[in-house]
Image 1 (cartoon, rainbow, N blue to C red):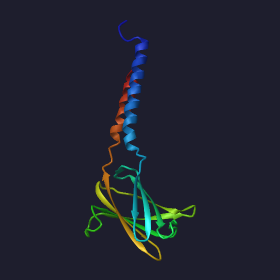
Image 2 (cartoon, rainbow, N blue to C red):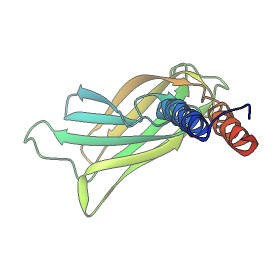
Image 3 (tube, rainbow, N blue to C red):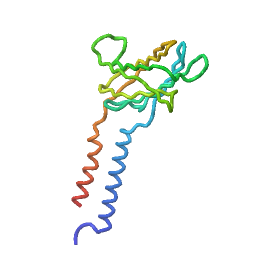
Image 4 (cartoon, rainbow, N blue to C red):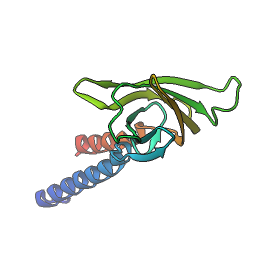
Amino acid sequence: MVGFKDNQINKTIFLLILITIIVFLSKTSFLISDGSSNFEFTAKNIEVNIQIKPEILTTSEEIRLKITPILKNNSEPLKTAKIDILACFDSCKIESKIQKIKSIALNSPQNPENYFSLFKIENEGDWELLIKISNKSFSDNFSIRITVNKKANPSNYYSTSIIFLFIFLVL
């Protein structure tokens, strides 16, 4: 009988499965970014630590900000503040019909020293985040430049799985 022996078929299937898993995992790890970017600012009244997640920002993906303001005069966390966030395409100083996104950051009774904000940016390019922190006695502004990349097309990453299933069904 001409053809593959049973042992060769098993090795071939195992090799195809292994290659498919490696390729699939290497592509999906690009989609999942757990890193973050940290920024520290000092103003007249406060010091601020801002953490932006994920580290690589992409369109249509939620951007998470963690803002920790600390009073300079006594190094205590600022637990009663109003934090407004304005995301502007290119620059917040340009007054035009350029896309702007408004958000606020909130804290909770369980964690009053950290403020959190969540929003999405749909357009790729360079953006400016203008963060205004205020309370009854002062108001300070901070600006952060970020770059938002176009989100990769996930259908390309799943094509490997479809090819594997096709080959598996044929064998």
